[in-house]
Image (cartoon, rainbow, N blue to C red; front, side, top):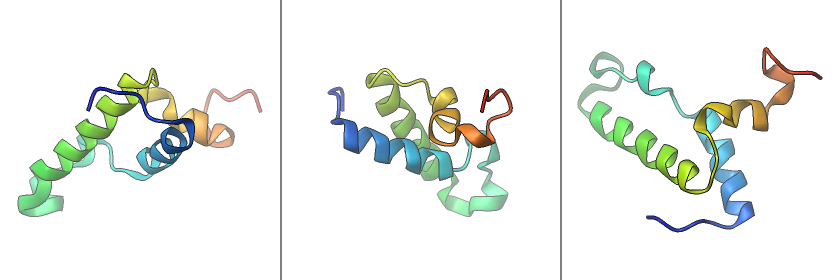
Length: 73
């Protein structure tokens, strides 16, 4: 997928991404044989965010600014 998505879908993807495990948290011990699939899914979402000019590292602050350590709220 290399095309941009609409704003509503992008917002929904950002919300879903905030609840996804971080790649560093995904281990074979925790996820069993599915761990590589989970890593692939995380990477697919990250790539879609990047295609849509969204920095995946900034999504948590965008969706939940009140819980972000550097928040000005």
